Length: 249
Picture: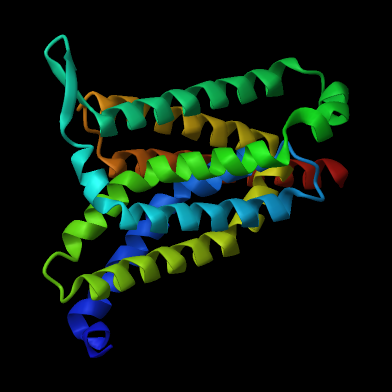
């Protein structure tokens, strides 16, 4: 217990928690899109259960860390490019995000509003939504879990390291639980924001596929682009609101 209260352990815990929270931005956007197709009365429960199930999956990954580390080894080569188990998982996740975002954009643009509202309760199943949240969370978590293991290397016993990593995950999921509802509600209230969120998912999907082929894209660039686009859209929302107020006078 004393090992957990050292300065080194506390710094590692705060750093890992911050890392998990930053990487959780992708999850919150995806969760808002997936649960937006469910009946309104079950959406909050789907978000909570999805995040809690994802948290359990992340913790399970920590106990399988030896297997995860082996995922970096090449299984076969394509045109001289080595393909590992991790590459296959990243490519599958990226393609899934591309397909999901493209489908949602098509549905948003092509399906008439009236039929969209009538079909909404049957548009997606509760279980499927939970499964999709878990699957994407595991894919997003691969890099963070490997990073967490590297950051805690040599810090006391295996039990102390595992406790630090699990605590960081629990803290990060707690933050996501706190922000999932307001973020989802905000995206649902503003159709243009929902389209922007889908564009983010397309961007993240492309990044995952690129990572699978060893074309590394710094996440800072992705997050900066997302933050800049979000800032512009917030200005647009304020401009439209001001225009409505002016027109009402």
